[in-house]
Length: 206
Image 1 (cartoon, rainbow, N blue to C red):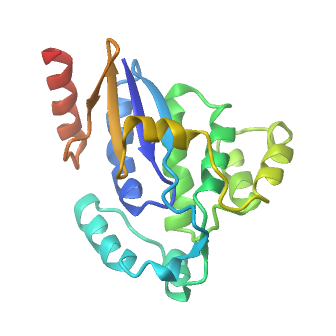
Image 2 (cartoon, rainbow, N blue to C red; image 1 turned 90 degrees about the vertical axis):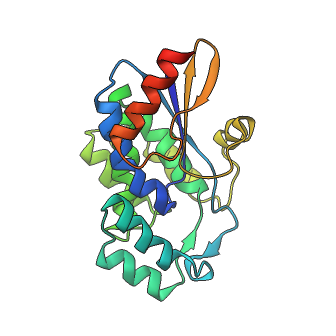
């Protein structure tokens, strides 16, 4: 079996759901994981254009119990930070090549914390240097490639094609592949126990 986690690094709902998914995947190290970036913000718009974000963050905190940091909230209030989902899609795909299967969801969580708590730009090479240090990845293995690709704005990442093929229209989306068939694993789950319920239902029914 295999899990496809369709997310976007700038998606607050993915940030909230991340700790739920991490708990579930920690309980199932036998399941292969593939993380696909959806390209939620590829228009190169400033965060201030999305007036719904502040209210959405309140709901995310209520449902998932996550915090949004002071530096992030300052960035949100200032409103000029450009959201470009291509950059974290590239950054994640490059760094994840050096990780084990069981570290892939942790990397999504840590990447999002640098934005939603520390207010670090996901278009800045410093952000990925910090992640590399967390995971003990030698910079020389990726730094030149990543620096070059971060110069491109609103690019098209190969993940977007796979996401479109799945028909995913919202994030986070969680798909379980079993015996060549695909099932919605997330449903309306907001806890690891609920994910476990859906997983067992799929596993035992199909």
